[in-house]
Image 1 (cartoon, one colour):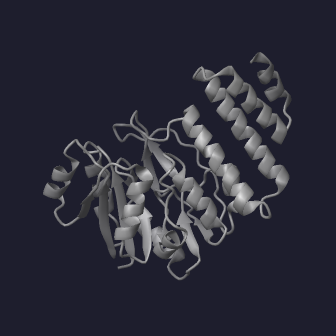
Image 2: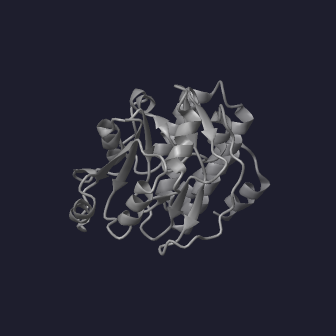
Image 3: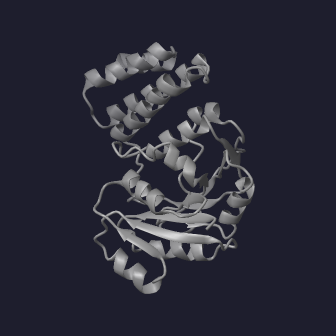
Length: 283
């Protein structure tokens, strides 16, 4: 088995059939399909098993996105693994393109951009940029370039690094891509690799709690893994920006003014900005 196409799901009965149709429409054929259901209560399991009885389907108690992905890793039998969320879609040649770009190597991952779609699968305006290939730790620290979907990784790489961090509800994937980038090259695809659906049920909303987790992921990675790789001025600029983003989100959510003041202070400690300084005076 060359590739394991892995689908975590939770109450996505309204979308998962479109996802599965995009999987079974792949030009690449040497793959298995595994679904880990993270405790759905909307009848997803019965519906999928009726229409796709050959799919490997595993139901588990709800434990969060990282928990579902770790279970998928443990069940996968392919040399390479690719994820697709149960409300997103693959292009017909996605798996073939990803696989062909890294099939001869043992030290590479493949990734690509996405096209946005809405609840009705209609494409929405999406700005695409050229992606870096090779050792991407520095640009990846600056921007979330790699996504769980539309990417491919050697299965052993995910196992060796210990899988996804189940103690955080978001950004467990960003954390693992950052650490993988220290050892593995990332090969960017010229064309988008998946369609990402945006709707009210998406997990990664821009909230104070979620942005604070992202900030802590960045700080932990820089301080414990990448201080000798990422230039200090570049890291400081990124962390200053993240502290500012968290502070602004805290202000929108009426978080304690003391917390907001401290966040602005931390941002200015990493890199002074007159704009941030003026904002800090308001609180």
